[in-house]
Image (cartoon, rainbow, N blue to C red):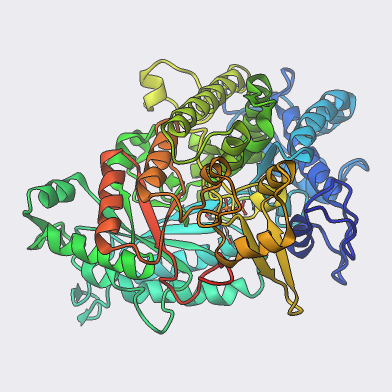
Length: 638
Ligand code: UDP
């Protein structure tokens, strides 16, 4: 899996070929001619240094955590030699905010002088951040790696924007989304406040066109922006199950014309709805403009449509919105209506969140989990991510304000499937579910501890008073600390399995651009088969035909048991695993329950109901081959 030599990039970290390709295409800095001008090591060091600089603001002689509201002005025009222009601008930006809020005892020139005199300290923090990234024990979300110490400087993956019921408000949201996509972030929206199709428009005496028509505007805008951005702009569209246009919403992605292709859609399902469903009763649809009940409809009718559509196309997913709000630690700031695009991060309107993930596969040695190392990595990650909030160049002032009030961060994991394999535990087993709870409980508690330690020095998050933490008398720096992201790209960079997902294929054929075909085998499988003297290219090609080893006689039973893929694993275990992690995650879990092509509509229903019963915050399924365009193909013969 190692890239010996890839043209244009010097691999100084022994990364995989795929990691190098991804980094070269979109992460490593380039000059005006498009030539790569840094190595992977330099990328991580650039990121570590940029975030370490923030620590200077929290030195005792500089920082006033009580925040007494005194303004400090910036009287320094000239950038000192030892800082890059983007580092200098970042520090100026952060200083301006800290001053406005009264957190600074000193002027900006003093901060710069201190940076020089206390450089050893900054350097130590930088090394600590760099160490975890260089070993890929911890990797921040893509925008942090892409944009640290660059003009853009936008470091977060997740945003939620409000969509108010006015033309001006809607088109502001379109504009804001474009600005966020440009910087590599994804946006979530609730369209539940928009009046339904056919409703009155007083100013024009016309009729409203409804949420779906406006979602198409967002979709097209996303398409246009993605041409110039570093990554695909992704959107989440949420509609309340009580909205009069809900049926049209549920079927909105079921079309030949690839409508809303830049959206994941989710129905925000309430307890009221679920109760009606279980009683086989009717429930109300309400016009959000005035709250009036428009009509009552059979919950079963809506539910069946959700399930059938999910079976057909993968959309919609479901968000259990009341459960989300019950667990929300800053209820006094408002109610959550949407998540980010992949569902793992519920946020208030204008909130953003930076994510980062720990590579669990690296925390196994001689069949044992390295808990001490894991603890240290969690603490470093929380420190790093808290700094991201200060260093970030927010795309909008409203986002800057909301994000700094709750200071949410989302530490998650990747490489879970590989950790289990290294421990000899099958993914679909009681033991694995128990271990999931144990590992995530540990990470969650340690992340809270780390955030509380930060609070001692830096103070609690500004909206702490009135929060659930305040009610418990716990002083903490970040309203939330944990989130399980999909880690779509950073798991490739780290060279491990993504998020908490099982392996997708044990071996597969990757078609490369020039028409070449490359056989890729999971390295743990390769290692075990070689150790047992059972490895052959021919056998691996056979495995690659379907991606699964379950039907292959040459693979011993105990190895088969360990190497079950996403499709070999019964959906119940997918959901139980998601629920086990959710139990100890402040935010939410991004998980796709992968179903086999022959899964039935009632399999989908069982999955959604189980997720609800196990108190997941949401659920998404994907039935193999159910969409025309599938991102990853499992095998050569499916
Ligand atoms: N995201 C996005 N566009 C993309 C991939 C991701 O906007 O092409 C956002 C989206 O909000 C998603 C979040 O980033 O929920 C985290 O995704 P992932 O963990 O896959 O990102 P990575 O850091 O691995 O690139």
